[in-house]
Length: 244
Image (tube, rainbow, N blue to C red; front, side, top):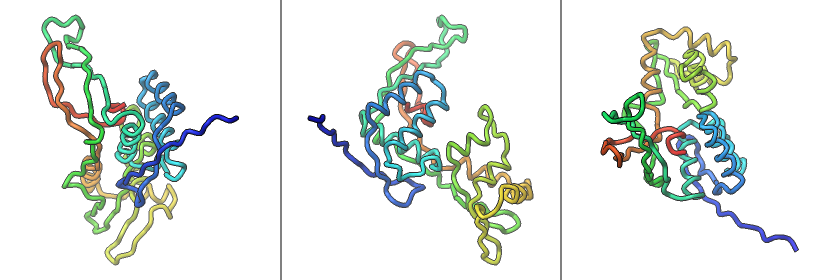
């Protein structure tokens, strides 16, 4: 006699960058093992890789996870965690307040405080100043795409952008000229895309900075109080590592 089959429930979620609702299932013991290994390493890239792998496992192969913008990836991860473990994340954060009687060289408190984060209250926020369109002084209108974690890693070294030109070449989706002609950047070679970006005037760079700094983001603000030194602040949680 074979063992009984465990039926896993399915859910759907609407992501900003995907037109149709995405099907997913809760992650199971086999996926939790992936998370535990990543958590032990305390390496941000290991955490990101673990999240990507688990999301791939739990979305039935119907989603291009590697292409997801970071905010959609983070949002989907929180939905997964909420349905798999609990709608409240029990996390620990370290107090960074400076205190006179600290036993540490940096004179900070370092007390670890338990913090409860209600996952269902966390939503993607979009700045009123944000637009996916960048209009150059020449009149060309560029439609931008949001970088995935894979794209951001590709163009960064130790957190610093190694090549802004290469990043822009990967993030420009279409170009529309004054006559209404639309050029799909994916139809051109890496060399052609890079040559176009490098011909953009320096006075237009701030427009791209505006696009990146006002991109949709997943963050949550919660009150923090240290039960040792009494320090209080409003703490902003942002990025995968903050909710892991």
